[in-house]
Length: 68
Image 1: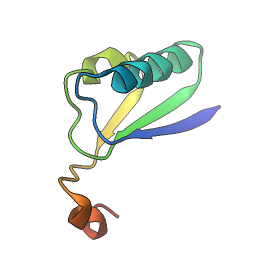
Image 2 (image 1 turned 90 degrees about the horizontal axis):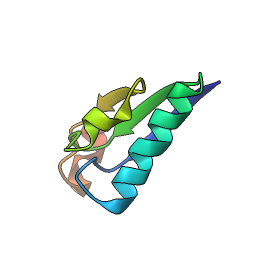
Image 3 (image 1 turned 120 degrees about the horizontal axis):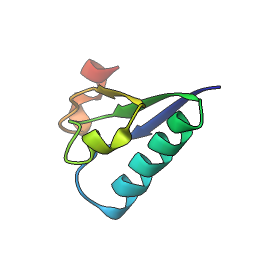
Image 4 (image 1 turned 60 degrees about the vertical axis):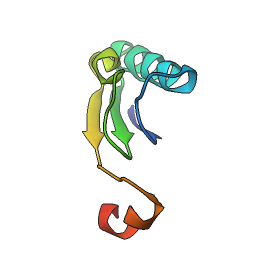
């Protein structure tokens, strides 16, 4: 199964750690996981395991048209 997961950033935090664990676990279970960080990856980017990471580089709310 192909899955797309998104999060504002992968800075160190509880929700971000859970996101990384979910993406890693689903990828290790054989799913194709694309993890999208709206900003920069952050400290937990290395913990995604076999999941793919795309960093969109969004820096503020006003940056939405450029990211789209």
